[in-house]
Length: 219
Length: 219
Image 1 (cartoon, each protein chain N blue to C red):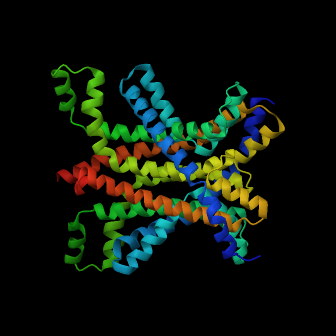
Image 2 (tube, rainbow over the protein chains, first blue to last red):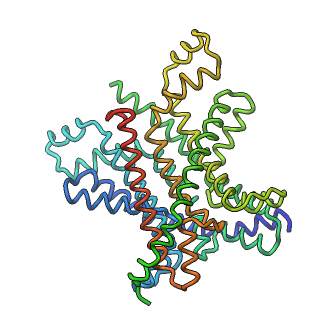
């Protein structure tokens, strides 16, 4: 089997890799935002509940979460497709990490920002949406880009629950033809080609943000 | 089929019996990843072609999934006549993979040390080796205790990946039970909960240790 055929085979799995990433984001972004903000705003028992939900998704081993939900949800009467379960598990796992970035970004803001909002008579929600969140999200954007890369890489796990992503295709090809060296190095390269530009973009964003942040501090 | 709590409880001893394997893999991978990561970072800092090459290797590792690395080592090494067995392959895989992340942590830790420290060491006539071990490393460790601890927990959570290589750690045991009894949900849920408990326990322990070693201002 030629290297070109191997690449074409792996490429067939790119659609699933991309779809799981995309659907994963559909879970990750709202979860990260809502729970990050909730952890920032709540206190006492409410904060404990919010933190527990975040910790469940963040601190569990994602590979086991995927298997548990894949095999256990049907017992609870929820027959979801492998795609939905994968997107949900991978998305909420990354969303758990993202929520910590959201919270850290909000907590790192100068108190004066909120106080100025209050002094201007703005409501708490307006302060959050118009003053705090925009600054926090911009400041944390390099972290979010890193987490996107983590999500793309984590999609390789879906090959274990029968989804035909790039990793699944590579395994399939190597079962037909025993030629592991070009097949698996091509697979590594395929992920690198997808993720590395995103990583470079993240670095560029970080450079763009940092001077601004230092400038703000100097003022 | 219903979720059988009694059956789930009956799987606990078998799965817990593999906790030693999980901890062994995690601990040796933490040591391996730290050692390789520190070596990588020293080579990267020394510049030249070697530094550029190692810098690229670190970027490459960080842009590719750990699962694919495990497959690569597991299938490619025997192709060249290197037969290490699943356990050793898995530990090398995790060490190598997380060394890329720890190298970044070490970089941040060394960058944060004032230049004067290295200059003073040189002025006192310390060799490169002595300077690295006695001046740079201790201060670096102080700077990076928290992120390093986070990656150690990540390594712990990555040990179930070795189940795909048939290493008998906790997830592997859970799958053994599942394939014997055709009941997947219960053993996998048990494995998931044990991992969650272990991850939370160890991250708390690391936090305590940091505070004890570095004082409450460490974070």
